[in-house]
Image (cartoon, rainbow, N blue to C red; front, side, top):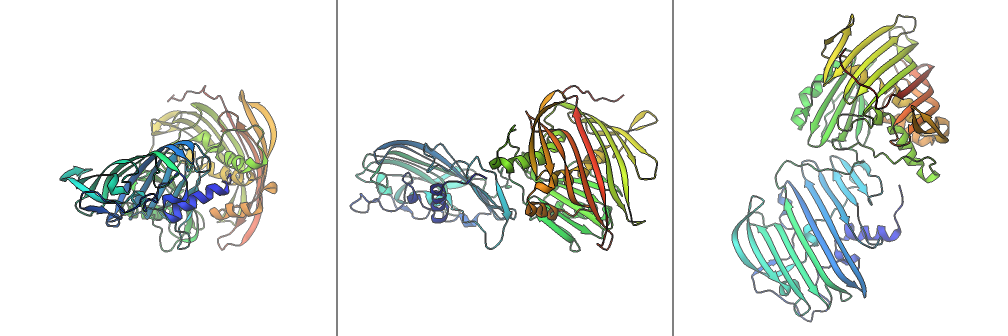
Length: 576
């Protein structure tokens, strides 16, 4: 993450901790004007001393404040506008502030700032160029997020225009006021209006423009300043779109009381359980609807593994359940409009300062090829080949087996033709062929494609799990190796090796999910498409350390995986 300048951090501190405009030259205060010789007052009887009053009675709302200034500050011509957006929901523990502006000065600009909490996570992004930071909410890190209504100038003596108007489906009283009501009498001209809820007493809308050549709440700040405030979404279903690289919180997702070995990072949770695969799937089918989640599509449930997908507002929850000595359950939450992690632009020769971006680029390379429900593959069509030796532990015999795996797939959009050949050590090959066409599964038996409930979908969803752990760990130690042409496309070549990775980062990666085997080392080479950052080729070797049902180490075994992506944009998939 690029570190902001100290003056920028100070501006943010002033805005969020002190909740006042007075911490910057272009900020407008709400206290008495220093140029005023006596307190002024409008001709009406209504006073607004605390514009945030009454908002604590609402369970949810969105507030937007637009401010602008055109004029001079200390004799220097300045023009800016800012948009503040605050979203609040008690049910989701949400209080999120975001800011956009076109401030001409980087010293005072807050463009892209996002800060707050939601669904058990605390979010921070200091500016648009920075990644989104998320951590679990605790009593020690709960952020102080200002109420936008408290940034409005106070009003003394507003006149009633109408006591019976309707705004955003609420009965409101409409008020009007001028410069006398905002402590600008004799210093400038002001036109203001506001609409206050008859039930609750909170401000629903507020509009004010002040023009002055003698100073707008600061003698050095002359010109025109505006405030436009709007409240909506009161008591309606709450939803909010966060920046694209923010993980989604999971505080409202249930887990069974008997869950063990619980691992979690923002956007991801895993645990082990003595429940069977089917029992674990049934647990979520019974409990997620009461938590506000709706099942998306048809779940894939069998004795080998299960895959379920649920939706809650803009969040998508994916559940993968796999058998073993204990059943392992993996839950991943993301916002439906974006990936959980941003994809940096491709760089032929990344610098040391860009190491973090390169690691993220490598970790996302495979998913850019495969795509998901909300982010399709970056390629319109392609052919994928995987060959490998995958070590696995046979709990019945207590031995480690080296199984051979081969996958050949043609992919066009969401349509897939796949052939998998799995050969267990000492056994005969098992071949599975099928299609996924327009969300319908087909299995090929005796050369004939027939509709099937599961088809190849489970194979297509599960094989990347064998790749992600060794690739994710080796990818933490990247080293540029120049460029080559792969599948007719310019590609950036990188050596990847756990031996060159940060040890603390590797341990953190291992702690994210239970793995058997645990990858003790991995190294190889990856080629990334220069235009899209998607993976074109991977050759990786790794060592997996296995444990038995009691958690005792039983030995290690080597693994090897090769993947190639070719015929990009040249593949057509249809039933034969």
